[in-house]
Image 1 (tube, rainbow, N blue to C red):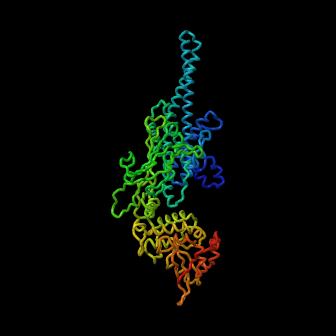
Image 2 (image 1 turned 180 degrees about the vertical axis):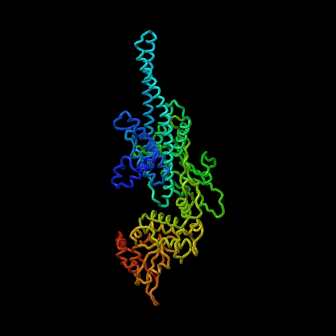
Image 3 (image 1 turned 30 degrees about the vertical axis):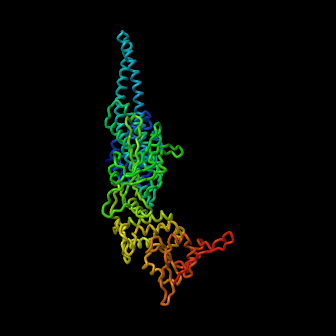
Length: 638
């Protein structure tokens, strides 16, 4: 550390260009020198130079040890510094040792791990080569000593040289054996670190998949994780083989490898295509399970995956197969099949159906649409070199099972709350009772834009009105961000003066927009969520005939036209009876707007024909068989 302290003092006085020339980023950057200063100062770098090619193997080993040390240091740093130092170690990789393409998630750790495995294999090969040479020298020495015993004293000098060489080889072999044992321990420790990183990334993928139901961004590509998983299996397989060839007993390494193999298999199944999160009994649905260990587990006896429905209590106590059957599930078996085209190994369930369901005793006011289940997938995989098969289980995301379409909206509320607000690594299927409005608002926005298939977000006025509605504070103009929303406010208690909950109202608006209003919303023609007080502020000074489109406050799934009307006592704001799904199926919104003579300009001042002209269909074509055409028109009755 003293050397670095002196150097650092000098570097402060040098211009940036000079510092960069001393520590080029693509060779040995300054970050590595800084973080590993003490360790670097304690190494014998003077033993290595271009003039000593015989030290090349030793230099490669030191390079790998250096990278391992930097990786250890990186794991103790914050995420920004960690990634910078891991990038440094990746650039320091010995190209002769890296042979397998690594996935995008953690190329540094995997590359380093593979380099260590190749180093271990090289040490084994070197040991074998030295042992062969030793055996040859011992045979020569036995022959020479026999000749000396028979009186040939001319062989004494040669025998002494041979004996010295034999002793040297024995010493070198002992050194190699020690290095192999140490290298094996380093390999297993690096493997453990890399596998922990892999499992963490796998859990992050699952969590992102969970939140994607709400509309949160999600990259569903599993190929990088599959590649990573297959590489880890290759490393474990190779190390188990190398361990049998090491004379030194390493029981700790043996135990670690068995645990890592078990863990890799335990996490090898993933529900790539989740079942519908609201399942109606007697209805068909599909799902797909993928094995991330790929074709390595497929050859030979077919791997059958079985599915069954489990309740929340059973999900909390996974391990042994559930003894109680809570649902009759038909078409619940499938075989893992390899698809060479896309390099996947999947079991697809195409026609599953819940025939009947057994429900748990409900607490208090809990309804059937708040009861969560899951589908448990289980199988047994026999792996080479293992005497007993691995029993593997994986559960789907929570599902709600209904018997009638009228339950769908409330079931969706249960699922949305679960997907949006469940915490990572939770106890199944625990969710908070309260969330902040900031979280809720973000969730509603993602849900709306994903369902309506739009990039046009809910603006601050929309969001503020939604907060006023759920908290029943129509006059409040402050910040709702940190106020807490309860599950009861979301979908248990009806809104004041209404016969429906907040979610039922919001979901109705979302469904209407998805089916009939998406083009208008994308073009910014719908104001959407707005309270009457705000509405009057906007339209108060506008000319007669100015209008805007807002979602109905009093009906589920309705859109209304608010416009400035001329009256006896002056202008006033009128609201036309909301148009619902059945209305817009008969005549679209643009045609209805074109029909209404009382409205002329979309707020602030756009002609309604300029705004909606491209969506107006006009009169229908003349029908066949001599019939005269007929049409419907929308009129406002004052």
